[in-house]
Image (cartoon, rainbow, N blue to C red; front, side, top):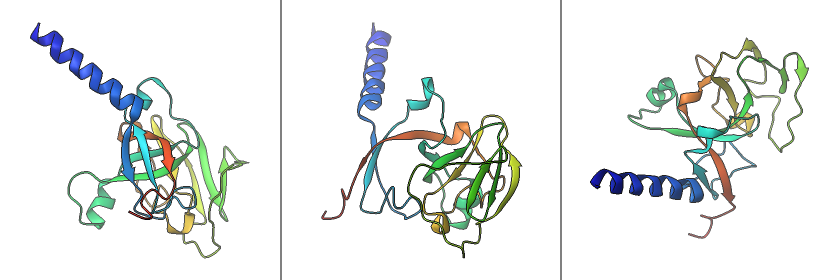
Length: 173
């Protein structure tokens, strides 16, 4: 009986998290103009249990160890960026233009690019199975897959998909 009660409580908590999501505050400009430092968003940690990760999903993921070390952070560090490359695809960036399998990718969202961006070009790679290439919408200010070694993020390190954005939630708080 005790096991049944504990399991029931756990299922209820998981459903509650799945329905409402967990809230985060935006603290960087790497996803501007989509997400700005005065915004908040909710995530569902169970989103990818039954649904695939798709191109252009905005995700929260565990930062690579090199990023944590460079920022002198021990423990968790979660980053928000957008999925642009999927497993098995050839990805290349030429003069701020993203190519998937040698075809220019139409990115149907607002983004910031700059000719002086150090990473406006990125050599062709083939994305390994169960890994993804992630980029911020504010390309010159985003530390993303273009800077990581290896460049891709493993599926298991992707925590969740963003469910809802709350514009200027923290502006007057």
